[in-house]
Length: 176
Ligand code: ADP
Ligand code: MG
Image (cartoon, rainbow, N blue to C red; front, side):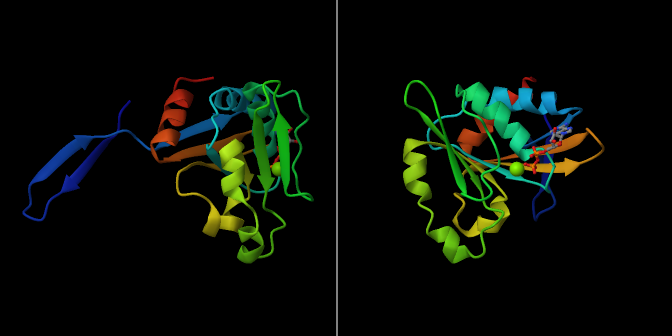
């Protein structure tokens, strides 16, 4: 269903326009469902894509990444790169997928030493705790906000920023 945005003009004329919603909400009922959603998203990832995963510990960010790496085509084991900051997953064709965890970043200057541009030249980049390096996260990204709703229930809000992430959102709207 397309949402209706209403714009009010100064002279009082109300016009309505139908535009693509930049937001999609999804409720996952177990870890497998989160992985499956990740697989769908991962299968569509391209070099230069940025996916930001924001949410508390245990919210399911790394679980989503497990599915993404699998759907993208890597058999490498996925874990939170909490101590080494960036994991690189590989695929048979030489493709690379970067998985960053900014949880332990202490400062923006530390973040600035990360060469995101050279990573993005080589592959897609997934960032856990992106809010800790907000100053250097590219403006064009798909931003996912996780919410812990219950023992196995997790809410995810996907928000697109830019045309590329809009098409990723469109794909997710098709279901898993
Ligand atoms: P984060 O990376 O956000 O800290 P993890 O993905 O590492 O979180 O951990 C999530 C934990 O919650 C895992 O133990 C996972 O099995 C469990 N879990 C239970 N239900 C879900 C769900 N619906 N989606 C994702 N993880 C879930
Ligand atoms: Mg994690």
